[in-house]
Structures are given as structure tokens and as C-alpha cells.
Length: 338
Length: 252
Image (spheres, each protein chain N blue to C red):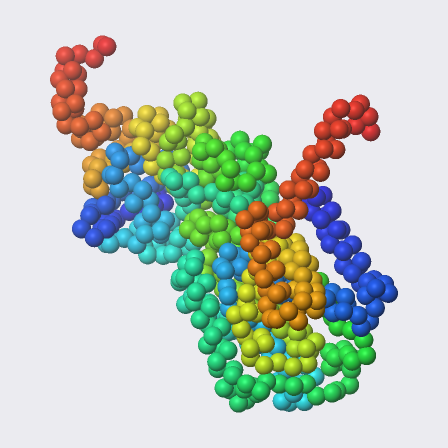
């Protein structure tokens, strides 16, 4: 129990530290570093949302860009189409994403392993095409944000990125907080049990279908929330931007690279991949498209070969090695008891 | 009163009849052994009772309620919990977390579940392994984990599928001791066992399957002298020889 509390303190300290970052001149209000920081928080939250069903639940979904997109369109349509504040759109988007997730997953969960993943691939394509030709949601033209009053009510800031940074941080705290809570809760244990062995879990009274659907709905709703933040930050949305396999892959890659099924994994993955993506694109983007993706791919190959548990596995190995030495030293001294 | 009643249960896999009109009851508070040679259909019957397989015909009642065809999680929630012959640890979870999943079935909260898990881990002598990932354990420990996990789910009927197979004789003794203790705590047990010697001393009743058919049912001493049981286990030829030997006298 003590170890858990220490772990929580670490996370609280991390969030407090992040909250102070805008005061540091190097990440001042409009710098590129600020942009990268916001993206790290956003992608960490997105991946953590995916981690609920993909990591803890073991159901690898390539369909999360659909939920992300629904969230983005929820906020986008509230602002652009109906001239409202994005908030009602965000809530409707989260709800719609959860409903769509359950409707899609119910038949797909009858498929196991790779077949589930393949089915979710198809769903992204379907939604992409439908949104491209659907006049009501703006079709292929997408939605362009009007200029409205800045502030929390409209979730928009023009002068500085500080507002967006704190929003992203709040998003991060919310998503990570939910997952941290579930980890130690009955639901978290049952979800992991389903991942490790569905029949075993059922033999212990776990309704695996209900657990997976609930995890999927929560995961989708949180992905939609991230999508809403994305569109508020981006001020524009069209189907290829949000509902695409590229976007789906990011949910999966960031989490797996960081360490699927761990609380820290999505943050570690985002903290490594997103700066890499943004800086290579900024520095070498001119060499032609895709340099960032080449580096991305190389890194993933290296990590997956070296440590399938991802960066969090590497961190754990290092921590173990460091942890072992002081204990060994303690054994050799007589004042260890003090 | 019968806690579990099996009525004419038949299970076919295509043309193969794995269970053929099997009927017996398990009384509340009893230890019932389900024995038979390899391929007799013991595990198949277990799978039918626990809802993992659907019966081809026949009915199963638990605690007075028909459970035929119910999904396995519903049957577990009603209080009939099983272990698996081929152990199924939740590999990436620790021993403690494995047992905790079982404990969450009836616990009202996390604290209570953790207490239950700790008790069951203690009962099965797993305390030193509590923090180890379940996938890394040797087979004997994994068998104990199966038991602890099922026990944590607070069953009325605990169904053990060959928990003693592959254990050393000392380990078997400890296991038998534990099974008695579980019974004394008010749990009814249905135990599949391949080794007759392990089950005979503790069972109140033994049911014998051979080739999917129930060939005998009764108290252990009656079963161990039953001719059909002996011939099922040792073959007809050896059975005849044994009979002949018995007639000459059993001083040896």
C-alpha cells in the first residue's frame, strides 16, 4: 500500500511541475516547445484512452480514430454549424462515440485476436468515406472555425498557447486519473483477467463481454474528448485529419512503444515519439515527405526487438538494476538498521 | 439435500459420445470423487457442469435451479466454481492479483477482497509467491494457485479438476489435508482425479466413468472392490487374474 502511495506522489509531483512550466522562459507562451508540450499531453491522453481497451483489455483496436473523429466533429459542429459553445458538442460527441463503440464492438468482440484488429481497420475506412460525402457534417470540405471570443467558455485562445496548455494538462490529469483509479478497482482486475484468459475469467464469475464493452465505451468516450480538444486547438477538422488509419496507428504505436497495459506507458511513448515527430518534421520536413516517419519506424523496430514491454519495460529494468545496488551495499554495512 | 444434480447428461462431439446419459447427485457438505481412466469423459462432464460446453441433452441442477446452458460466469456467480486440469494462470498478473480476481466475485469492496485473497493465499501456502508473476511458477505452485483462486470466489460447490496430478506424494498429502479443511469450512467438493489412491481416503462417494458411461457409484470401499471398476482401470485380463488371486486368499 505504501508503494502505491509513493507512486501516486510521483505523478502528483509531475503534474505540479508541468503546471509550472509556462513560467519557464524556454517554453514561453508561443514557442514551438510549448506546441510540442501540448501535443505530448494530448497524445499521452489519447493513448491512455486507447490503453484501457487495447492495453489493459488486450483488444487491439485500430478503430480509435473513429471515436476521436466523432469527438472532434461534436465540438466542431457545435461551434461551426450551430454557433454554440463547444461544451454541449463535446458531451454529445463523447456520448455518441461511446454508443458507436458499443454498437461496433458487440459483433467485433465475437472475433478474437488478429481478426478483431482487422475488423476495426475496416470500420475506419467506412467512417472516413461516410463523413467525406455527408453534407450535414461538412463533407470533404470539413469545418473551419470562425473567430469567436477567447476563453474557457469557447475553449479558444489566440494570443498565447498557455490556455491550451492548461486545458491539455487538465485532460491529461482526467484521463490518467480515471485509469489510475480503475487499475486498483474491481473493474481493472476483471478487465486484465479477461485479457489474460477469457475462459478463466468467466470461470471466476466475470462477464467478459460486458467488461469488454464497458471498457470500450469508456475508452471511446475519452478518445472523443481528446478529439474535441484537438479540433479546438487545430481550429479546423476534415475527415482525413481525424478519421484515418494514420491517426488510428498513433493511438496504437504510442501506447505499445511506451508500454501497453501500464499507467506510465502512454506518457513515456508520447514523450519520446511526439518530440521526435515534431522536430524531425520541422528540421527535415523539407527533404520530402516522410522523413519523420522513417525515424519513427526505425525506433519502433529497435524497441520492439529489444524490449517488447516498451519503454516502461526498459525503465523497469533500469530501476531494478539501480534498486539492486543500494540493497547490496546496505548488506555490507553495519549501520543499515538505522 | 443434493446441491448438484446431474440428470441424463449426454455430450457428443460429432459422432464421439464423450458422456452418455450420466446421472448422479452431489450432496451438500460431501466430498464426491469423479474417477475413471484417461478419456473417460471426466473433464468433459466438468466442462458441461461449469458451462464451458453445452450439453447435447440432459439437465443439470445446482442448488435447486436448472443451470443447463447458462454461461459459465453465471454458474460461477451462483456458487459453483471450478479449477482447470491444464492450469490457466493469468500469466502477466501476480499470484496475489490472480487470487484477487476470484475474491472480487463476492467481495463488497476492495479491502474485503484483499483480505479474502490473503486468507486463501495463506491457506494454500502461497504467501512467499504472492508478488511473483503467475506465469513464471513451477507446475506444483500453479496447481495451488488454481485452488486458491477458486477458493477466493467463495464457492458453495468447488469443482477440482485433477489438482493433485503431477504432485509428489508429500504434496498430495498436504493437498488432501487442505481439501478436508475446505470441506470443514462448509464447502461441498466434486473432485476429478485420475489417481484412485488420492481420492479414496477422503471421498464420501465415488462416481466412476468409463468410455463416457457411468459404470459405478457408491462409497469408496465398495468402489475399490467393484469388478467393473477394476477391469476399467487395469483391463479385463488383469481383473480376472486379480479375482483368481483373491479367491486363493489375500494374506499377501
